[in-house]
Length: 135
Image 1 (cartoon, rainbow, N blue to C red):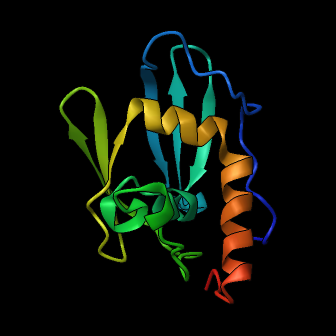
Image 2 (cartoon, rainbow, N blue to C red):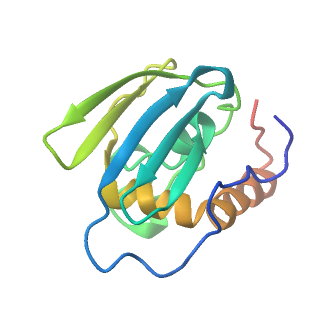
């Protein structure tokens, strides 16, 4: 994987869906270390495991306020080990580095897809500014 921003299958859109997004497909892509998510609204995103891991919705990564968000280095080769349903509104992603506390709602996955280029670019900039590496 190069240091370039991972491509999204659907052009990013800052406009969230009018109703909660509902997935029609959720598939781990082993060879790409990614999760493919397709929604009823037609949006389809291939989200790299590294991106999902460093943007985990867990308090460990996000903190309890925006200024507490952590920049997580060394996750270039992380894999999704397991996907567990959480009710009918989300999934828990378990990564091979042991991280398993993030619950990814359908809305959060839709947002990660729509904002992938900007968010991953900001992550790369934060790594650089802090002298950290993707690993």
